[in-house]
Image (cartoon, rainbow, N blue to C red):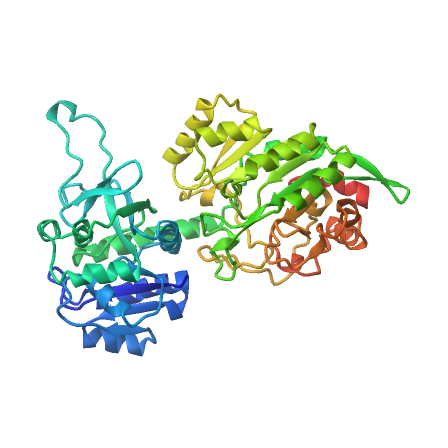
Length: 546
């Protein structure tokens, strides 16, 4: 499905004439927004829709794509609808030209949800921040139901409350002007040729969809959105950008701290689960972790994950029962007692047969430790109970959105009577000082991170890496990879469909790679450009291979 971004921009704004060409730190507002859009989908998928010759001439000078629209467009969405007629695409993103602080990850999130709920309009929202007044009519406030479907939007502070509960803390949410439409939705919107009654009264354009009986799903984005409604907003944004620059410079001197709550647990399983096997007269360890990336798909596209890279193809394919059973059978013959973990750059719960796969491992390997890493989005009480009923030992849930979401996941685990040995909620939402709460990497140098710009190393890191000494990494197609970070499959050690697990583990190539990495020799692809230190665990395993 092709996704494009169309930025509506008119010169004759009633509150701020000439707004798209207003400068923020000597760069025009429209350029700020264009650059964000291009970071998200690439230059060829970004257009500005305008009726102004001044704006089109400026865009032409700066090598930006634009589409001329009529001057009688009632709203920005009408302008996007008009422009969409000349663009072949499946998903159209209306990114307002006065939102210079929008995150590419938020736009991608909106696109992702549009793919999931294609017959609904998708719109972003966030919490009102401390200095934003709910009474400010320039900020559209929204309310939504449990399914995150929009109930209403208003420039007044909603929800309201009675005097007797005045002291109760009220959470206000604001609309973030990132919309996702299909072409059909846009044309239906445009075809009305007039504003709806509610749209006219509130001056909120997406209320017109109520008259079309098209549902609007609200998707939470980061609290960084700050629109330029008036000329005074320029100073606010410059102040914010100055603060961000200050924090960035301040944090450059700080060493990133790995605060993943799973690291202690994982180190223990790696160090304590070593099983030795006689190979060519030597006692060598079996893998202590079998990590399975059991599909080609995920419901998210996080900025720190390879899935945010345009070249990472999403495939709704899953590991076959035949391949999975072959792995279990061979591990059973070895009396395997280590960890089997469903993880990788995928969401395991999207596989409907995941419960049966876990039960298979439990039946074949009764003494093994079975774990799952999930983002928690598809998780509910019923599924959580079913996972553990089928033999799961531990679930590791990554909370990516907020402290509140992390707490909801904690409460869910407690409601299922799980003890603290059975679950870990990993706080991985973005904060100013924690960088998602994880150590970000360049994923074997194969991904110049879309948001954090973590580049490939120019010189190999002169540190050992023990990952191949304790991990057997299997993807859903049967490929055995040297490392979970090698998402580009630069080093394939074998094919489990055709070869035995043990033959791949002790192959000449696998052994040679271990010896090189254990001695800090990373002079081969992709390890030569990888910034992962790889020294957190596995040293005990590595010594057997030296």
